[in-house]
Image (cartoon, rainbow, N blue to C red):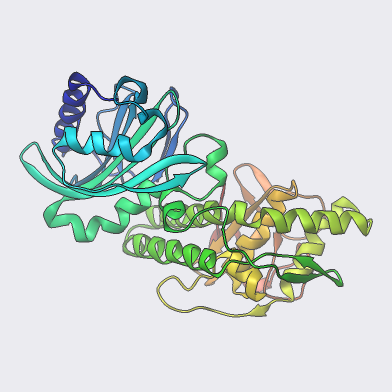
Amino acid sequence: MLDNESMRRLLRSITIAFLLLLLAWSAGALAAVNPVYGYSVDLPVGWLEADNSNPDHIGFLSPNADAMVQIIALDPGAGASGAASSGPLLALHVLDQLGAEGEPDAFSYQDRSAAISELAFTTGGIEVQGYLVTIANGAAGFAILAFAAIDSYETAHDYLLSAIDSFSLDEESRRYPGPVSQYFYPFPAPNARDASIRFAGSRLPFAVDANEIDATEVLVDREARVLAPYGALDRETASNAWRRYFRLIYRDNYMRLEPLAQAIGARLEADRVPRVDYPQELLSWLQGFDYVRTGGLADFQPPIACLATESGDCDSLAMTYVILLHHLGFDAILMTSDRYAHAIAGVDVQGPGARFTFEGRDWLVAELTADVPLGLIAAEMADPDGWIGVRLRLR
């Protein structure tokens, strides 16, 4: 665990980071990977790197420097007995060393002991409030601090939780719900009830846990609040904010759809459907769902809810399509348009039809809310300049 000198370095790095007020605004989301420990974060657009010269503790600042995130690699074996396997014990030690108020609440993250704590403390003469997440990970545990100056805390609150939820322990973890999501409701969902969904003339098993759906909707609503202010900024910044919004929802839903994707793949194989036809089979199936908009700020139904209700609108169905294609081994992207108030998908497959160029590749368009084949799009929406491509996987 942290010795006194390590904690002094931590507090010094926090204080230094708060003084970095002249850093420029960054238009793109700050997606960073720690090359030493392998974890990654996908921070809100405009956040900036702070004092990151030491991979053991790195920091990121909000655009106006009134909030920050710190990620600290801990040595669980250097402290109290049992700390190596206990997120709550790590949390108690960090809280004690910071002189912070807070009480850890234990949960499991990626089959590891973790804890989340609300906390308040003073650093560099500034009173701050936020959250601490600790994860026991064998040789190196992690503490994720996300906090804001007291006067900014209410405004920063969603951004702090979003930043923590963007943390991935390793590359594999980028496909699973984040720490905040797994705290809100465990993954895999513990109370899934057996159900089925129609596909290709049969019923496929599809277990549903209503609380899991609620958890995904909580994330969608939070990320919609994070996204909202970016709509008043320039097009590039707003586009990057939309991309991050969709990435976090994709990540939260990706593994939730894996069992169904496997069942779909097995059904198509049993029916001897040529693999090249899988994207069209999936497209035709989802086009048969009811068109439903949720309304509200998000106006987005998470993919697992789309499947549970066999309904959705353009962007929610397009993301559902992309996730299922990814599970089946096809590359695909989301395409969204403010000009047309619409979303579609793009698929990297052979075939005739309209294509959209993104990241040096030509993607065959897929319209989810009209009964048309892969490659067709309404003529009034065919201008490529009206669309932005969204790579949903964080690479």
